[in-house]
View 1: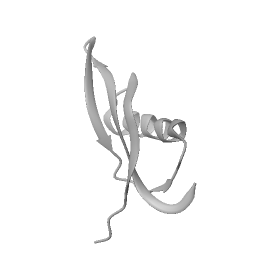
View 2: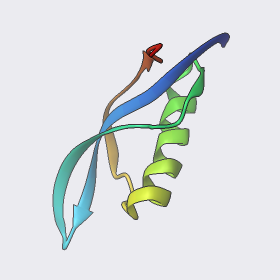
View 3: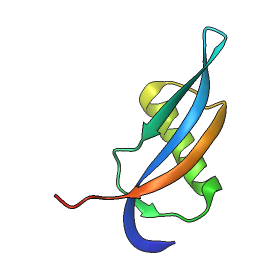
Length: 70
């Protein structure tokens, strides 16, 4: 992990009325630049549940993007 700040992002699947749906999510929060995909996935799964009420079934991808200076 380094001191660079990033936005965590992912593609994921969830169930709605028994049907699998997919979505993408980019965290509005600024995070530390975590390097382990499992750490990123765990943080995003918790944030998605708290903000959308959706339980992540599986991740399609996890990643990050640099915070843009305004």
